[in-house]
Amino acid sequence: MATPTIHWRDYFTSVGDVWLLWAVCLVAMVFLVRRAYRGRKWSGAAAFAADERGATYALSYVMTFPFYLILMCLIIQATLILMVKMGTVYAAHAAARTAIVWRPSLPERTTDETDQVRYDYTIKKAQRAAAMGMTPFASGTREHRDGMWKLGRIPAKGVLIDAPLYLRMYQTNARHNTGQSDDDQYMLQRLGPNELAKTLYVINKFLFASAATSVEFEQKEKLVPWNEDFQVTVTYTMPMQIPAVGRLFGNRYAAFYARDISTSVTLPSEAPETESSRLNIPYDPAKLLIRR
Image 1 (tube, one colour):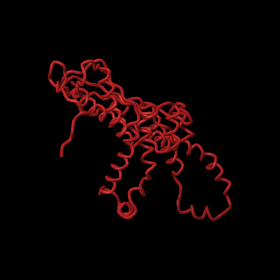
Image 2 (cartoon, rainbow, N blue to C red):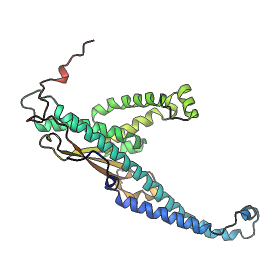
Image 3 (cartoon, rainbow, N blue to C red):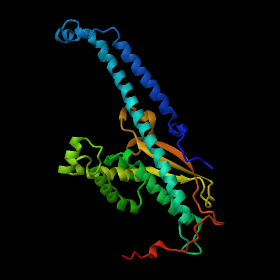
Image 4 (cartoon, rainbow, N blue to C red):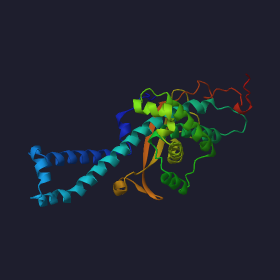
C-alpha cells in the first residue's frame, strides 16, 4: 500500500535535464554578474554617463549583452517549466483521487456493461479533474489553443459546457478573495473580475488545459481491490513561451515548440471490501429525480 504523500522525486520526473540546466545557468549568471561588478566604484557612474570620453570602452559590454540575454531567457523558460511541473504534481493527485472514488462507485445499469465502459467513464472524470488542476498553469493565448486543435487534440463536448462554469467559479472566488491587494479589491468591487483576467483569457486557459492534459491508469483491465496501490499518470503538453530558447527544451508542435511533462502518482484504492470491489448498489443516476 502506498502512502499518499508527495515525494521529492516527483518534482524531477521528466524534467531532470531542466533542473540541471536551470542550476547551471543560474550559477553562471551569478558568477558573471559578480565578476563584472567586482571592484566597480558606483560613485563614478554618473560622471562616466555625462562624459563622452572613453565611451568606446563600453563596446565590450554591448558585445557581451546578447550572451547575458540568452542566459536570462534560459533561466526564465526553465523556471516556467518547473512551475508547470509542480502543477502536474497537483493535477496528478487530483486525478488519482477522482479515479479511486469514482471507479468502484459506478452503477451497473446493464448486465452487459464491460470494464472498458467503466474505465472510459472513470478516465473522463479523472481527465476533468486534471484539466481543472492544470488550468492556472495553462496558456491563455488563442494561438496555442488553435495549435492543439490542429493536432487533433480537441476537447470533448462536455468541456465546452464546463468552460463557462469554470469562469463563473473563478469570478466568484475572485470577488471574495481577501488575499488581493487594495487596488485589486477596488477593481473587483467597482469594475468586476473581468478587469483582473479577461473572460476570453480564462476560457482559453481552460480549453487549452483540457486539450493538452491526458490521463492514463496503470490498471485498466479490472478494479483494484481495497487498499491496493492505484497509479495514475498525468501528462501535460506545455508550449514554450520564449521562442529563442524554446527549441532547446521542447519539440515542434504545430506552430509552436512544446514539451510533454509527466507525473505519476500512486494512492491506495478506496474500493469497498466486497468480492467484486464495487458498491453493488443497483441505481441509475440518469433516472434519479430530485424532489424539492
